[in-house]
Length: 419
Image (cartoon, rainbow, N blue to C red; front, side):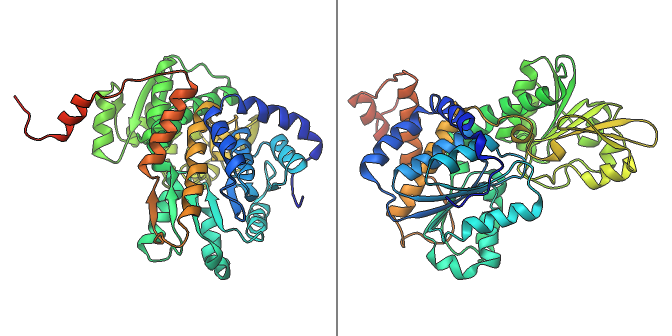
């Protein structure tokens, strides 16, 4: 296969890890079994820009089983698992372009390599592939049936494109499926972000003040996991509604300028730029730790951090850079400000990605079946797909639920019955 990976000698290790993850992804396994029989994606070429992990491997192998040709590149320079990339390249018909730690030039060369396959469907995690396709390779847009987007950041970009009239084909917002954002964002991001912070620093969080910037579903997850480990959690927000919810969940809520003075560990999860800025860095205590769990490395102002350190920077641990300010205070940046849970750990647990990637696979099938009928805008995951993923997940967990009686169904349809 035409691939660009670090070392094909890592393939056996990668295959073993992919198989381990598959044991936790039983919803996707059921979909793969059906796809193998029905081959609903025959004749379709899929270009995917996703985090190259064991869970993603199970997704792209499911799409391949459904008859699709698949090319995969990384959606983040530090999130690739090199053994997984090697296994996919060595043992399947999937083209892979991903190397952990690749530079910016290589990152975009890899995206272009995926686009060279002339995809009919795009799968994006942050919208870099879709953005590049629209800006630099517009001659291919007529070949694209539709695409999916996995992240909050990417959906924001796609909606901005749609609002400007720039989006040329339909995108399904997998991120907004209930079985994605209520579970992946909250339980997946929550656990994997705390895991990454602990792996990279070996800090005890109990008794420490952890500042969570942003109280969306990802922020909720990080805050709850930090609280569960005994941290004193502070939430910063710009939206009154989630701020109110955080306060009623028992967290301290305050402006970041105040939190900067007391925080010991800071986690940004907003999907926006310039969250932690120079004005906040100048107030931080010695030893403060900064981590970002948003998709792009723009939430923490790395330029301001470097300016305040004036060159006094050293890699003190794997994925931990120490910036020493003129007054001797040290601030530690994790994973170069990139998506910490994938750069410094393994990303979300497979069991929760099972639902997200089930939504991805079924949404691709839905797009293909409706080719030529969908407007070029951001579409929600159809409710029936969301419900099917939830049903299958319960089934794989051995959980049964009640069903409405005929009397209950009639009551819910009626407006005449009351007190």
